[in-house]
Image (cartoon, rainbow, N blue to C red):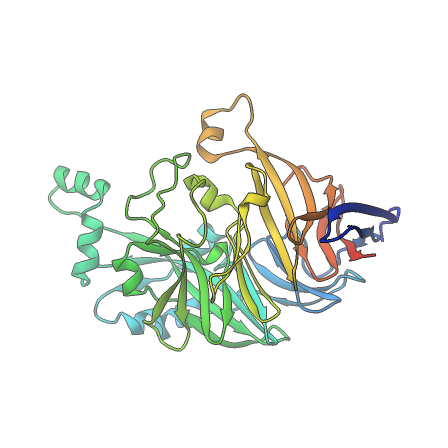
Length: 411
């Protein structure tokens, strides 16, 4: 165990009441750092996702390969899930090959999948609710569309295919695609079922692409995930994102129907107007099921998915400030925010991929206004989890990773 000094921050904020001035006091207390148990799973990078299971247990995504459960009070790793023993060729046979029989051929090569994905699949996100884990998994395959004339024509209309067709008589299109699944697990991380995420005709017709890897939530057999309207294509990542009030932010997949999908949160209710294309793909999208309300944040605002009620407006943030994670309790929203600063001298690659500097990472507590804040000494992006009474993050020294908890409460 790595010891750190326990410290306490008292934040006094004065605000105007109806008749008199009142004082609100919040306390932040940092606990000891707890070394992460690496006896079963060796961490090679910071976790990409943290989720609270209960007061002492969190779920962690490690390196896109493992879902692991840890006790944050001891650091002990006591359960793990991976797809290393899954026969994806068999899974594809009972799902995609069956669904698109006589139209498409799915050629799975474990060597190709391993080379492109660092294993036979990627575990990129998960959701936990009602004692069940929902894990987003994809795997790489070659798809032959020779018998799917409609889809083949779509590929032939692309610029690269048109250039090839002008230079040779025969064009053999080989398409590498990620097939997407939701693995449903019980509390012991044992597989209950595998749900294929087939393409939805309505999304394709409306030029939407789903991005499960940016986040999703499952509630009442519906899966909610961000969607991006690609009608105008994506050419300049630094260019302004195309926004239209008729666009939607989320798609709702019916997990009991392979073809059904609906839309949620039109752009007229959730603000994307200041986003560049890069902002959309790099900002932290997050879902929360707080007080039986399904909430969604696009990194600037927080809304109730069902009612479309705005819980938090971007006007309370600074221009270059973004939300990383949040938690709502009654009329109080606790969040972790960060700011992005553009480097003075950028290479062409940095301009293209948006390698901005990160700073001013803070815990902020809002009611009708900002009532408390604490700055964190973080200079790189790291996954942080906000619970009802603490902020959990992962630290690292030269040899080990550690869980760090910062407790907060109203005094």
